[in-house]
Image (cartoon, rainbow, N blue to C red; front, side, top):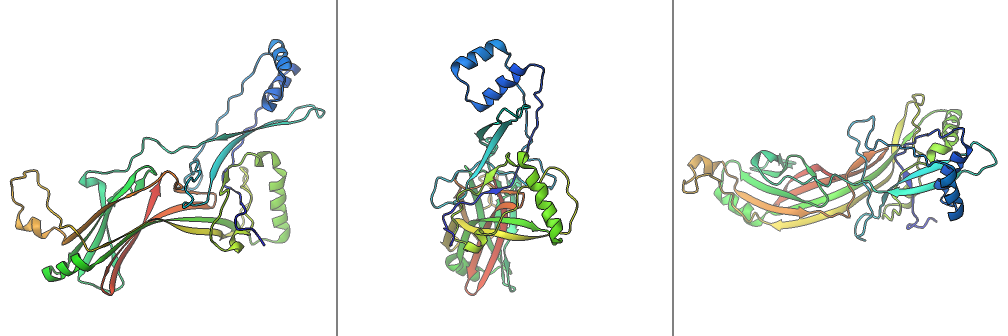
Length: 353
């Protein structure tokens, strides 16, 4: 039986660069090899600096570049809260020295790196033009209209908060019904995260699959440079989903097109926030630049009958939204207004950076 605390690694991003450092100077090659290996002694390194010139080979990787639109590369995440997702997203750069002479041994250097989100991003908090109103739906017609108002970008930093408003209006206007709803309605607001891993299935003959896997296994050098994600999955989901094998990362070279389908090998939903309120505690007021001017009758009629206002504080320990290589993390804002036997609901996709 598989231990539910057993870790599982899933690779979702890989990039590689090959640098030709061959030259006529054998001493230069040995010097670079010893720097990568990190095993040179002080006496030998001193002599190498005297005998050979240190050579540098710059390289770059394009992070966040993908052929399919809408895919977002996740940032580094190491959950510090035991209540959060037991998931870790980590990156590393692997430098491999492969000597020309067969008598020499290759060297390997692994360097962890951190991929950070945009530190200058902040959620919008202000002008009327920066808000979007989303209606709540019911299964049957009701004499009430409800809506939730959010910043129109629907994008929030992990270090920021999510401000929102929930309003209702009776249709047609009914002061008696409005007072009843304002005092007795139940407002429920939640933010949840959905983590899923989807892998492709190739419905091809056995020999085609064997050829496909042999192509991947032959590319052992590039497979060393991979990003690790989901390292310590301790989800409460079924063990059968955790035991499903995960496909290795796709090669950068083009493969023949095959008709394919996909299946979900892992899925987990966690509640990030859950709040509830009885009634709409506030009555909306019309804002006017002239504080002494009394609002007109038409302005008063255009106001909702009730207002609920709140703010949800996020945290650094949650994952950022991303969708890459079959692995996705999505966040949903859900709001419900319960009035007797009738319920109005809305579910909105958010982006957390």
